[in-house]
Image (cartoon, rainbow, N blue to C red):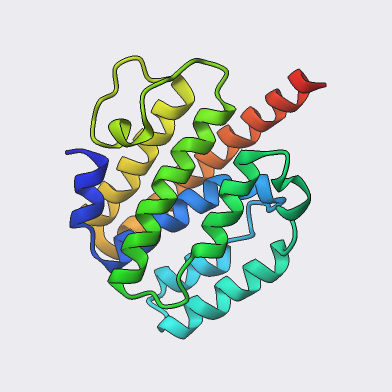
Length: 187
């Protein structure tokens, strides 16, 4: 099943986790660390009310406020990550998180494409629909992580959140390494 199909079939929790996982993997671009989104993940895992989601997002936005502003004019990856955070819906309803999860999926794949030195000229949307031939390694790994997160939530419900967070943590480390490599190359 393609990533587009998985997003279309996901429930509210799966969509929220999908968007959150994409943002979590890209948060190092905004100066965030491994604990930055932990309160948002925690509220989702505990089934906290929607206002807890909104409060946790406000705290994260406050913590990372302005982190993307300085580099945004120079770095498209940072700008995309900042937009993911800014676009996170305060209302965790299925309609709001579906649009956000979809946009986060595209942005995260684009960020990984920007950070991957390998060529990948196919449109990101074609990758999300399952056309994977000639895909660059960093983008391929991100696509697999996005699919895995949605499958974990679809198959295990709330119990899938912990392994989804583990998948996201691994992806965050990969992205951090890619950013470091790019920084060294730019010298």
